[in-house]
Picture 1 (cartoon, rainbow, N blue to C red):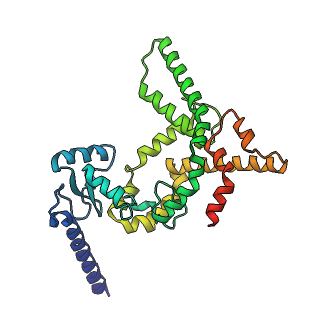
Picture 2: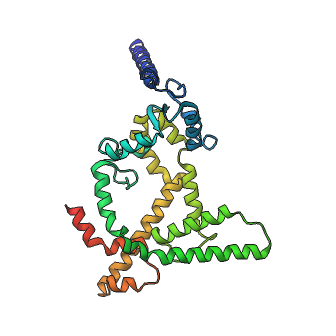
Picture 3: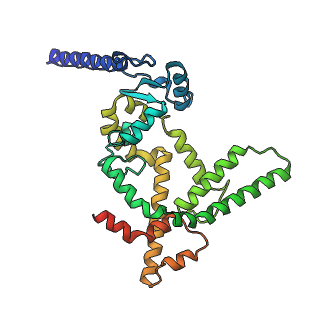
Amino acid sequence: MFLLILLLITISSLLLFWTAKRKSNYWKNRGIPGPEPLPIKGNIDLIFGKKNPFSLQLSNWSKKYGRIYGIKHGWNNVLVVSEPRMVKELIVEKFEYFHGRFLCPIVGDVDTNKFIHLFFAKGKRWKRLRSIANPAFSISNLKRIMPIVEDSIKININLLKEAESSGKCADLHEYFVELAFDIIARIAMGQGDSKQFKSEYCQIAVDTFAYVNNNIFDYIAFIFPWIGENILEPFVRATGKIRGDPNMILIDKLTKAVKQRKEERMKKIERQEEENEENLNNKKFVDFIDLFWNQRPKIMKLILK
């Protein structure tokens, strides 16, 4: 029995190494240049983590290997294209073949996972989500959220003036980050007033961006996609709050904000005070939760199709 187990482990290891070696030579066998990958990990150690910014490394490789080259992102082979004509051909003329995007396997199955949003979806699901979201993103609706944008900008300018009058040095990057996430929190996450330098949303959002491509779960998932999709994905989702995962915290806060707004609207319906198009226009500030709610009859028709 022991010998049988040992034999199976040996055969599996040899098969894994042979497959990994074959995938490592994928671009070389096709005459496409690129950095030399390791058998299993590929080039991931050069493009993962804070010390290896992905976009900066791609820029450096483009200078060395040209506008078209191949890399091995963990287990998967990726073709990097920055030739304008080919980019146009791929994303415009042949969109039906290249409509998805390369995602970390820990995201899960983009066709069946209920947590997949518009930016991760592909194919028919992306088209359906886009159709559902379209009514809320009309030109007239985008104009309705401008008062929020303008209000946050005015407050940001006043904060800069206060810093100037105090005579202290101000890091403009911090102010721009606060402004950007203040607007996002107000138009998409149910935050009522401007809370620049006082809101927890900003730091959570910054932590979320810093967490992407910079954690052990993503690292393992890129190298072993099956483990990432089938084992790590449910584990990460189940333990997100316990681990303080900023992405899960952000999603949880957004879910609660939408739920609270729904409850407020339902109470108005019970009192026969449902906001219609006219009094929605009279509101001082309108956000995307309002806009999506107001478009719900159209959205329900699309969902039921």
